[in-house]
Length: 119
Figure 1 (tube, rainbow, N blue to C red):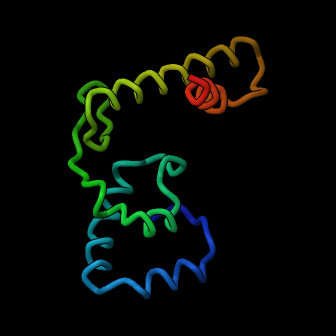
Figure 2 (figure 1 turned 180 degrees about the horizontal axis):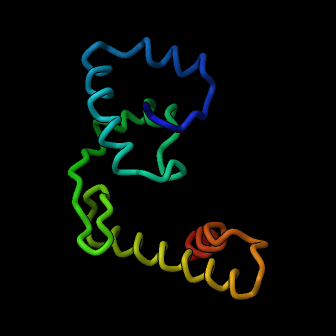
């Protein structure tokens, strides 16, 4: 259901079984919307972090529809939206440069993440 098989299965089971029935119901209600709002699996939290951080309680999903791309994204403030747009535009530009140069030595996401973390 979550679609990101990462983490220690036994530890995840222990965390899951320690949750109350109400929390489990809330999680099972939240996950399909969360998965729909993060179609690229690499951007989803690892399930262990999802449970530890109680993500379903701290990050409500009021989804909005982007009219230009028809993609659904979690509702975020304007500053975070701008960062997201800049990040994705930079990844696309670097990927286009790699294609033009005939190389893909460094993935665009790595370059952008490094530049962002250095700023």
